Image 1: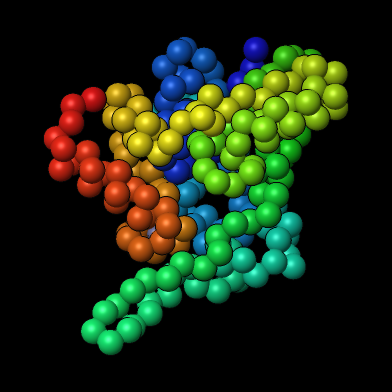
Image 2 (image 1 turned 30 degrees about the vertical axis):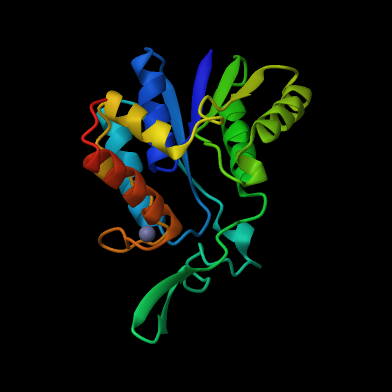
Length: 219
Ligand SMILES: [Zn+2]
């Protein structure tokens, strides 16, 4: 069974890459450029971890797919986080970061690439999805995608998302257990020199990292 991972270089898919390779599986990682603000930083992370784990990394450019979108996650979109000043307080307000159909689209790209790479073999396509309110990060999504994939590949390709019922805190603990260099996984929605610290992805990480640092947990 060949394994192909949709890989962003972020903490969730990086943890899944470590999880799969630890089991001794050979994994091909596919990274997509869809015009996201964080693409350069994501790619640095993706290159670092695939080199470390001796995995092949394939880069796919699908930038034009969001030609008509101005979503703030995209280079051409507006700001992800705005500073709002009220009296003596400074607050941060985040714009809508949902890119409709993104995970279905990215998964389709990976399935397409995987079947081109291994036309005669059975393939497992892995997605580093975790539980969030978004429908395309749910078990229902994975089941529906699997049904479609089975139909279109005559059962040769299976989609798996082993973390889909897990939260960010679980992934963080798993990353520690697997000796993932967490600081090298790029989660920030922006592409600055260092993570911005105020976008939703940075805030998630700060909460979890702060919680475990303060509670001095061992993993
Ligand atoms: Zn950020």
